[in-house]
Length: 119
Image (cartoon, rainbow, N blue to C red; front, top):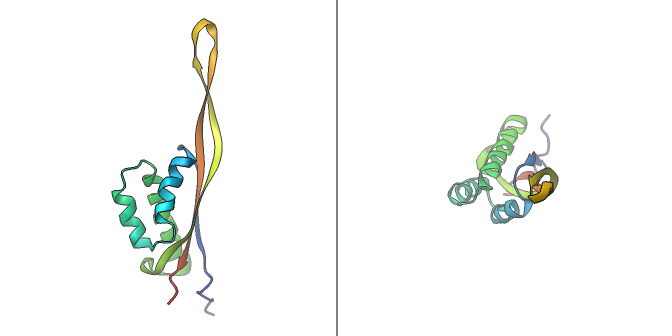
């Protein structure tokens, strides 16, 4: 029995990425709505540190599509990419006179949803 291929959505989620969500959103907005191959090229040549986890997640989502739904990677596009704020790593920086200054190191959760390019 063949399933309907028009409404297949392929998801991949990366949680607790040690990066500010604001910095990751700057990269995510550049590839939103683009094809899989275009997004790979853009991410490879962008100079930002946030490109690496998004590139890994995009490759994982495409592998999910290939393995679970037997879809070709060339027929995929990024229908949604969402960057949410995660928990903070809470640390203390020693200061003068025995005080401690709190440091919040942000994390984020990235969700990518791929879809099939309509013909």
